[in-house]
Image (cartoon, rainbow, N blue to C red; front, top):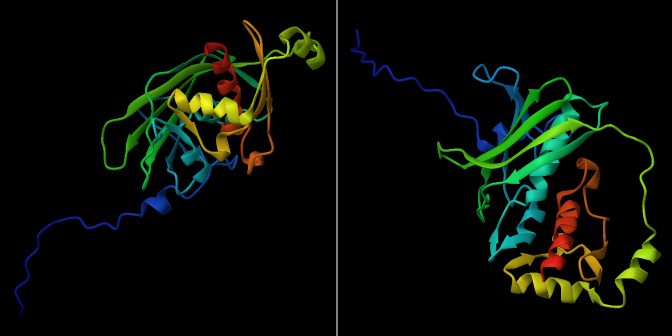
Length: 239
């Protein structure tokens, strides 16, 4: 008989990163990934995905001091899409949103993101978004907030665009001037995030016209680039 020795080591093939995160959630949103629950967090629903520039190319156009940064608008989109996946017939509004730590995206590879949604009473949820680098055991908390079922009270009072323009006056900026200003402040937006076309400026308010025809809009409730352009618009008042 031949002598046989055993090292008693378990050898299991590890699935590739691409296969582990290839499956999109049931909404088709590329930011959410796979849905699961944890025995350590009863009642909480989680989604996990690997997000990187190669898989979602438009993210390379959102940079702070030349480094690609996951946009705050994408955290809001993740939370709203997660709530829609849980209760597709309901609409939600977000409150108490806080953006705590930036998530820097590497030029190659990606970061693993987790969205956690936890019930709070009968009509609200808390959400948290964390991420970690590939191979890193430490999760970083990026965003928190609250999702509440919206109560539609009917038509809201509004002001016509023409009346608003008349009140703001003649001071305007075009897209080139607007994004030259953001670049001077260290915010570098590439074409996918340059959606502000014109700005009318007043002393304490502003009106912005946005280009909203972005690619793959149907995959999102509101495309992160469009929502980010709304955030960009608010920055006009600070300059």
